[in-house]
Image (tube, rainbow, N blue to C red; front, side, top):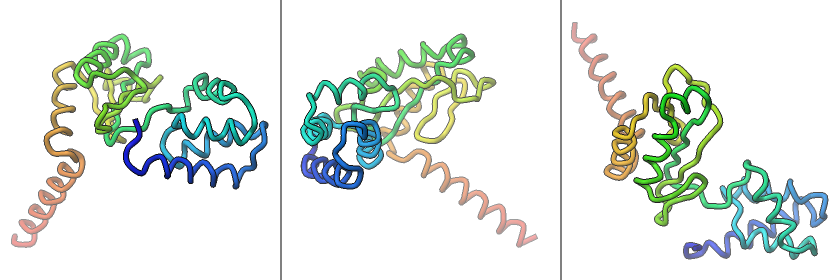
Length: 185
């Protein structure tokens, strides 16, 4: 489902990418990458436009887009949850954390909630094995994630929208207060 005005944005972006890269069959992957880079995902409409411009069946565009896991077929959510499924995370409960996100958000990995607030992905390894199981929320690592922590993470983003922004403001205020205290000594 496209949001209001999104159709025009997709068509303009796809047209600009085709003009920049050229409408040639051997440019298919770079075309898909460029569209995704600009839109954040590969909409069906963009892939259909690329197929038409290259004069190839749409299935020849959908094939690579669905084969390579670097392509995203759903728009990213405002907040992205990436559950690590590397060996350490998997063994210590990564699948349980993933299942908890699926139940709570009612989406599967690679999908986005209908309101586009949250998207869910599973990743191969985050490189924070000592914190397993790990979830990356937007660009911040959350370690030792249990089903209860999953509920807390989602709730914190639902209730105040920008948990990270609020946390950084609190830290900044604390640092400012501490600095003032040192000046007064």
